[in-house]
Image 1: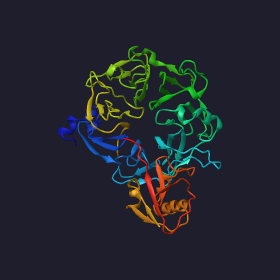
Image 2: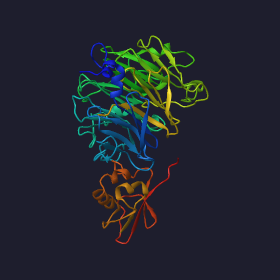
Image 3: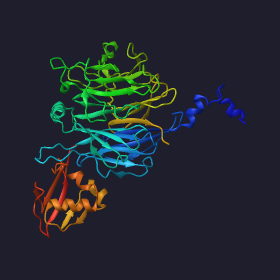
Image 4: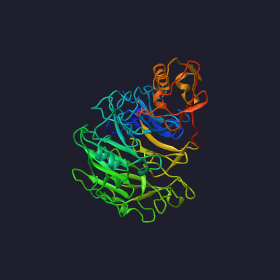
Length: 397
Length: 85
């Protein structure tokens, strides 16, 4: 029989109230930085946080991801200023780490012309229908797959060595300041043979055959004026996200704006044109709502003139659309009102799955911010970290 | 021969110095990998090229070829080139 206390916390339907469900769940916010990684353990109310770190102090951690299939396995994409890249793996939430037996590496070219992985940049765990399978995207652009939980990695698909893809990838000089990257690896939750990835630069690509073949997905996208819009080389997607509640919907933040794509359609629609003109629709991260495909958060940056890549006018703000991009609302309560010149990288903004949903982002100046109310107000939960490269919110088992 | 290990690689070797008894620098690296799995890839990429910020010295002389022959009494130093803040 339920006690008075539990009755009070139980809704009329007999299921636990939202408040009770929140208290039962634990949260883990994974922060990857230019000089190590930190784990923030939160209670279900997201009121108190216990910091665990630094892990790998001094190492460049581009991405730190918890496997949602077991809630225990962490993978960290690491390198240092001197040493080559590797993947570290923990099966006990970061208490102990072991290095991958075979990190991502390109095939060796007999004539010495082959590429070398500078760093692994992006990690994607697959869904429950592919146990132990992960994908990794690297700089320079390469796509890799592990079938043993991240211990050994093999080049995946033909794109790494395909002459056409190599031409679209360009050279190291064509890429972002710290190297061209393959990122936004997306596995359709309904069909593991249906894959997407993006390259900065090199465009967005799709496979329907488990990665045997890929094709560009560029229709409707703009490129910098004067360049050939049909050539993937000139496309620079910054971040692509698929909506879990509607896997036929994708959003993309790229060098020229914010776009939406509804499948089976093939034409991207620029929804960022409805952002305030003074702010624009240039930025890096995108966050989709896990239960509402019409809701999307972005964090614009200054993409004018020499591309300062700072908060526009030094006044950072998140923007949200609740209707698939028809309108946007500024969310800046609690954020600095002036003279804040940081920005947020493409992997450094995310959401948890609680209700109301929590949002998190990490700044280039080493601050970790969160909102318990879907962006309506913001608190800084950590300062003085190294430059933040990635933030992931997860629920440990 | 003596092989001096830089601090970023001590997590593999658990110390600043190891012994090797092989005739080339390339084989030193293979021997290190055998003893300390993963260490070679941190210094040498998948195309068998030295990584940009790793340098090798034999008797205080820089060497740029992995095929460099070594004698039993040589001293090999693996050095991390500084790369800014």
